[in-house]
Image 1 (tube, rainbow, N blue to C red):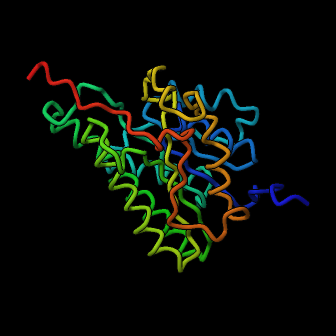
Image 2: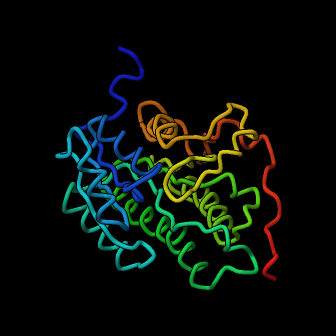
Length: 262
């Protein structure tokens, strides 16, 4: 039998994916269902998440949830929904993030925009992961968590609220991995490059900075995500970051923001 056969155990494995209505989150959630994994599709948009679930070949394996993860009570409502739908979550993917706007540079970003980005990216990611981990620890069950960070966790993006929240999330991965490893709960990061999907409006001119010569697609992330999430394929991997960017991180392509209005 190939080591790539039966990467997941449909009898045991259950996933929760935030940001599953579009972009990378959707691609990962749909790929998990394709492997027979029962999956909660969580998103802020009811229309998007319904479309994501409706396009599945096996929609009976999916459960849709809609809410704003910037609010703690909504995070708790998501956890309760996941328990009701599938009992215990063993695999968690945090891909949700508020939209990015190029005008929100350091001199323009508002307090509300700053707070919302951190609330969804960092606070919700931490709260959901910690509560899911507590349930796995109590049940003496292993788990696998995957956080979507960014190249801009280490390189400026002219969007300080976004870059700093992703940097915090990258460190959270390491903190959780170090703490939870003794319970056989693995925590890793997936680091996308210029992916033409979700909240990122890709500029085709970026291709000149990408060694592989094209912008990325959401589907480019799913195989790596599933490999890292799989307890069979990556049982000895935790606290790691996996860059999927076509080589974009080999360059430094961003100019300082335009401050003409200041």
